[in-house]
Image (cartoon, rainbow, N blue to C red):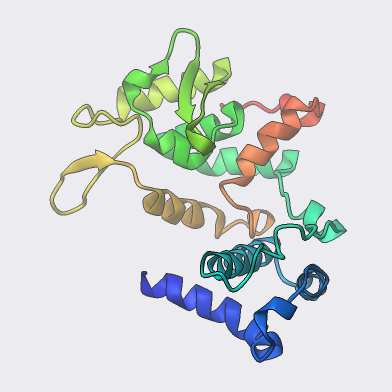
Length: 239
């Protein structure tokens, strides 16, 4: 495994082992694990999910090695709290106006933000598609999501104008990807990477206090809210 993966496993398992490491593993019951997970509620949602998945893997290994007949964590309920609900963030109308103002001069970033906001696709899904995958007449494209399931994503007319401007004026034709990038020194053109997008995103929002801690993934959550019929979000123009 990669060093970062090992470090993640270590930081997750040591607190658990300090408490229960001297217990016979068959005494670790569902109730004990639920109690342990409840004590992690002060952590972020992502961190709690990491703890659960790593502990799940630990007990799955115990089952495979015949130390246990079943995984006691499998039947544990997932705690649901106000913190869990509020962790799903989305952009307010004011934040969206600010974001579109900040990316307006960057054709590529503007097009990417528009697609994320207006189509509901996730950034990794959009970065994986090629130009030929986009039906620019019917304003739609197909993505490969979780479980290798394909779905159509549709985008708005104003997003189409932004996307066409990027394709015409900035996108490189030397690569099949919809979103392309050119290496600074070698000038080699390749598919735009998530790492580059994340860097640009950080640079865009760092000067704007109202966008502090907002993630590019939150555009996906904002799209979902729009589909639920929140009018102040649906009326925002991306141009």
